Structure formats: structure tokens, C-alpha cells
Length: 314
Image (cartoon, helix red, strand yellow):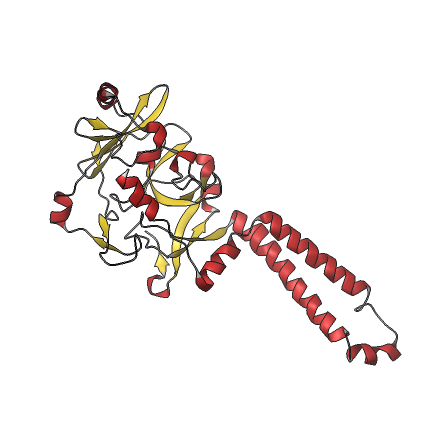
């Protein structure tokens, strides 16, 4: 459970003004519709009463009393309505959305506390591609925090396996359909000593990577009537030391041998295999399986904060 404990510790809360921005960006549509409805009702009421046309001899009185305030409120409500409809009912659902990076699973590509913009329109007109950095709704098996609800959490990983691909991770190297893949974005990291837990990371040196323990190999297999993620270390497969979701955990050494001997399986149609760029610090498809196409939200396009890291994601 040590690896799962470390991965769970990666989840950190954001605060301050940027935290407020992130929370506002995630406002449920039901609340947005309610606010727009209330603002519309207030505007209608103001225009039927205080702001309705009045006789000339009453205009001076109104201009010196409630009408200027009412006019300001009317214009303010108008701005909220347009913003609510345009931003929350058009841009966010169909075009762009901002997201906060709470963990180190994509270090060094994305750092903890980065804020990114995801393109939600691109996957409406094209399919995800190998190597895309994808925002998606994780399956239930991926949720480490027992308080998290399926559908309420967003994950971000790199798309490593497309439908029909045979993906294997052997000796810290990715193989796609039997061919070695060069991955310049991959790094191996550890939390910085003395830094905040799972927030600050340093890259492992080549020597540290070579001597890194444990090292897990990975493949998908067809087992018990479905696709099964198999993490292997020597003769052990998906045992308690490995970052694997509970329902994929194995205890019997004979069952481990059976799974290990199975050939690597293809990613099935309608699913994707995701991995974090921080390969030794990411709880991903190796531990909880595949992501359905319907769970994909969008492609990460650029970092917008902090300013020092502003730029395209690759």
C-alpha cells in the first residue's frame, strides 16, 4: 500500500484568488441557469416599475432618487446574464475550460498548481491521437479518495494507447505494437526533501533511475472475460506492494503465474490507455484500466498560470 499512500498524498487543495477562479469555473450548470433566471426576473421587475417610462414632471425626482441605482443594477444584471449564457452555456461546455493541476503525475510537463486550458471542441470534430495530453473523467477504480464521487473528479494524463494498439511497458521503456517508442516528455521524479509533500519534485539522475526500486513492467491481458491491467515485478503480478486498484489485486501466486503468461492484448474499440509523464509517480491505466471514449473531456492546450510557465503544453 506504500505506493498508493504516496499517490493519494499527491492530492492537494488550491486556495487564494486562483482557487476561487477555479471553483467559479466549475460552477454547476444548474446554478448558472438559476442565477441567470434570477437576474432576468430582477431586470424584468425593474423595467416594469422603476425604469418604465414616466411623465416628464416625475423624471427629476426619479433621477435624484432610486432610478440611477436601479439603472446600475439593471446593467449589472444584464452583464451577468450575457456572461452566464456565453461563458457557462456556450464556451465551457463546447469550446474551452480551465483546469487546476493538483498532483505530480504529469511532472515535469505539468507541475503541481499549474492552471491549464483544455480544448473541448477538438474532440467533437476529430478523435484523440497518440501522445495527446487528455482531460477525462476517471473510472471508479481510479478514485483513491473514498470521499470522491465518480463523475465529480477530472484527471489529466497522456494518451498512450489507441483502440487496436498493443501497449507494453518493459524495463522503463514503452512499446507500442512491438516497437520502442521515444518519449521525450517522460521523467522519473521524487518529492523534494524538505518540500511540501507531493508538491515539489526533483528529477532522478540516470544512476538513480537505474537503481530505482521497485520497477514494474506492464501489459494488458484478456482475463476473466475482460481487459485486465497486469503489473509485473519478477514473478509477482498486481500484489499488495503495487499501485493497483483493489479489484485487480492478486494474492494467489498460481493466479499471478497464469496472468503473467498471457499474451499482451489490444486496447479495445471505444477505449484509451492513459499514463502520467511522471512514470514512477502516476496512478494511471496501469493501475485502474482503460478510459471510455465518452469520459474524454478535452485536450490540454496551454498553461495560463503561473505566468513564468505560460505556454503550449506538449
